[in-house]
Image 1 (cartoon, rainbow, N blue to C red):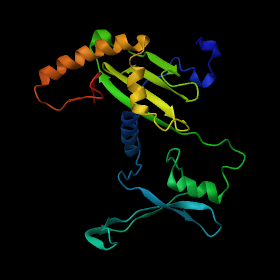
Image 2 (cartoon, one colour):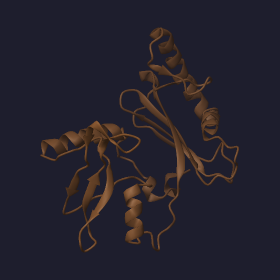
Image 3 (tube, rainbow, N blue to C red):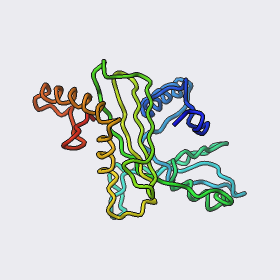
Image 4 (cartoon, rainbow, N blue to C red):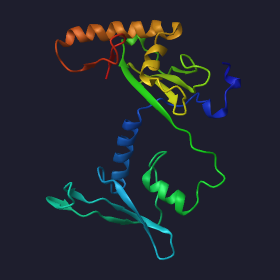
Length: 226
């Protein structure tokens, strides 16, 4: 599809392809160097409101609680974190965000949220097969005309390729398997040649590993490095 036919939000020339996990770890280090306190592993479980009904912070959950509700020896109560501003970044289905959307009627006059299921494989390919910065997006096949979805292929970092497939969750066929559709996608003539070249590298590495656990298989047909 010509670039001029795409919406502006899909015009990403000049941007970077990155690992979100690596970016978050890097941001965490930058924040700590500035004196920001970070509490990894402590999920916020409650929104705190002041007497006027405004958000004043969050509370983390208790740790060291047994299934029957009793306290284990390592029990620690949750912490109340108060702030002038509280930013909720929980993703599309955050439990605390749902509370806020209901309490403050934030979804009024808004389009309904749309959900999908995504699958991704991470391949490490030979340097001569890697095209750093290449982005491929597809839509449709092998899905039928009544099912929304598509794929992405990102060449990034040191000889890494992320290959993914997304299926909209409003699909009507109860027998549809998003995983199997992902595998079928990789048999398309425009994709198959690249996958077979990557596969040859993976199989050579698998033979060289001799029992090590660095190689995983996404399917019997197209193994992938995890």
